[in-house]
Structure formats: C-alpha cells, structure tokens
Amino acid sequence: MSRSDVLVDADWVEAHGSDPGVVLVEVDEDTSAYDKGHIRNAVKIDWKADLQDPVRRDFVDKAGFEALLSERGISNDDTVILYGGNNNWFAAYAYWYFRLYGHDNVKLLDGGRKKWELESRELVTDVPQRAKTQYHAQEQDRAIRAFRDEVVAAIGRDNLVDVRSPDEFAGRLLAPAHLPQEQAQRGGHIPTAKNVPWSKAAEEDGTFKSDDALRALYGDEAGVDFDKETIAYCRIGERSAHTWFVLHELLGQPNVKNYDGSWTEYGSLVGVPIEVGDGK
Amino acid sequence: MSSEGCGAPAGGAPVTAAKDAGTQAVVQGHVTQNGSAVPVGYARLLNSGGEFVAEVPLGEDGGFRFFAAPGSWTLRVLAPGNVRAERVVSADVGKITELEVAV
Image 1 (cartoon, rainbow over the protein chains, first blue to last red):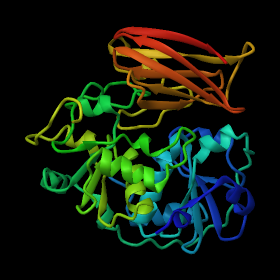
Image 2: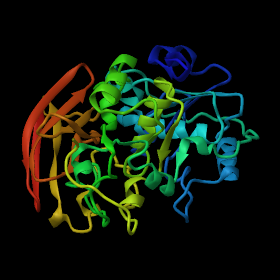
Image 3: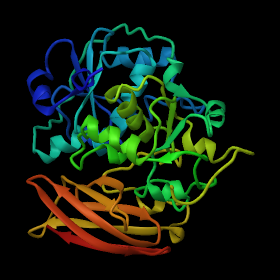
Image 4: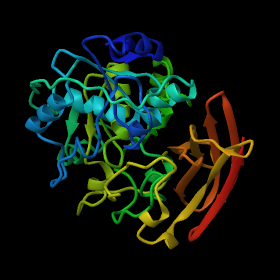
C-alpha cells in the first residue's frame, strides 16, 4: 500500500472529480458545511444520520449501508474520494467504515476541506443528481474493528494508542475542547495506552505528514512496537479512525483495529482498570 | 446535539448545549478583517504546551467557541490568503472569555 493508493491531492480532484466512475463524498463534522458549499459534484454523507443505527449504539447494518450507497448513486465499481473538515477527521472515519463493509476502492483528499478552502478553491451549492444503484456490501471486516473484550485483553500485551488530546488522556477533559464537557463517565485512559494525539499525524493545513515523520512519531517518540498488534481508540471512534488510516493505510501496519466504542464505552464499564494522569 | 456526538456546527456548539453552562470554561469570540466578519477560516485551540487540542470552522459571523479546562490557552486563526493570527487567552470555570481577533 502506498500513498498514491489511498490519497489524492486537490489538483487531482479538480482534474478528475467529475470523471465517470469517480464519486466525491463530503463527510463533515459540521453536517451543515456541505449545504453552504462543497466541491463540484460531491454528494454528502452525514456521519450521524446516515452511518449510526438510530436506536442501538452501533453502525447501520449491511442492508442499511447498501441502501445508503444505492440511494446516493454509488456503485461497487466506483472510486470513492472522501473529504471533510478538521484534517479529514470524519472523512477518515467514513474511509474506515467503507473498508469495514468491503469497499476497497476508496481514497482521501489529502488536506480535506480545510486545505481546499484555505486555497480558495471552488465550492458550489448545486447538489448533483446521481442515478440510484444496486450496491452490494460485504460482511463487516472484523479484522479492523475492535470490541471491548479485545481491548481489555490487549492491556499490557498489544499496543493501545489513545489518540485523544493530552488533557483528555490525563482525565482533565472528557470531550474535545470544542464540545461541552458534559459526559458523566470516568476520565482517564486505558492502562498501558500510549498517548499520540491524532492531530499530530497532520500538518496544520490538514495534509498527512511524511511516512518518515509518522514512523518516528508513533515508533521512536511514543514507543509503539510495530511488531505487535495495535488497537487505536479515542472518545467515540472517529479520531482513532484517522489514526487507523495512518497506521494501516499509510504505514502499512498489518494488524491495526479501531475500537469505535472508545472512551464513551470504556470509561463507563464497571470493573475495568483506568489510569489517570499525563502520559509517560 | 446528542452528548454522544462529536459534531460541532460551524462557529462551535451553543453554550446552551451544555447541561449547565456554569460548569464550563468557555472561550469564544469572532474573527474580523477590516471590521468585517471572516466567514471562511478555522480557529484552533492549543494548550499551554503548544499542543493542538481542537479546531472549529468559523461561523458565518466569524464566530468560534471552545469548551476548555481552566488555564492558559493559545488561539490560532487560519484563513484563506495565508492569514494567520494568534492570541493567548485564560479560561476559568463558570466564565465565558470573549476574544475578538482582528487579522
């Protein structure tokens, strides 16, 4: 896996975004951003309304994902280019989610919406009309999704990478600082987890750092052992999808899972160990 | 907005989204250029060690809002045209710290 297999740049999107067989998809933290302006011919996926089960805390099931992509006019053969704000945070989550259901021909626009906006590239409000398709999803690929029992078993054995901010890791904040601090669960982190804030993988313009810089960040600086299996987590599994992308797709680590239950689940479990305080 | 969500509207979540705004350490304000709102751009919050903590797109009125912890923070603004600005700000629980940033 190389960068060109999983990333495209803005010039590529300007040249090929309207090609047959290419579908641009905006997935944004701010779900109203698309409506104010988006890249020409991009469709929208709402990370919450479209990708979460409305009742249980889980993803939409296979049939639900098939219905969503069919309705958006995405077919199994399409190259899906995902982009979004905040360093592609939610776009990377959607990338992981597409891979979870077996759509392998998916890439991220490096730098996402932020770099596009900061370069004053074109944004339009026209919503493209795409013909419906008959999308067929695969069963979830559990090799990239971790559940709580695996996480508890991984303590002290595998790499646990906590990708939240240092203040959340230490237990001083319970949510990212642009959200109200209203969570009721305990603060802290999973014992033996290394704290590598997800945003360290990105430059200020939202593009990913070089492979060498990323390898140094996780390996030499944080002490992640690349010979072991790795589970990444954050608060609800979206920032850690960004780190999953870095470790699995950019650095080619074979055994990396995203724990989407993350701190909102782990920090509410009865009887599991928790550490507080800053990283070592 | 659900407490489960990470989704923040442009300009930041409203203070009323908190169960009790009195327990929050809010840093908020607007970004202006020549007296007009800057509606396209980003506000980033860095902790006292210079580490990135959070980012929001500016609202149509140039607005931003963060729910921080007590202490000293740096606010960094990015806008098209390579516009950059930084302000150091102190946050306290139960207080809304207002910051007007002219770039």
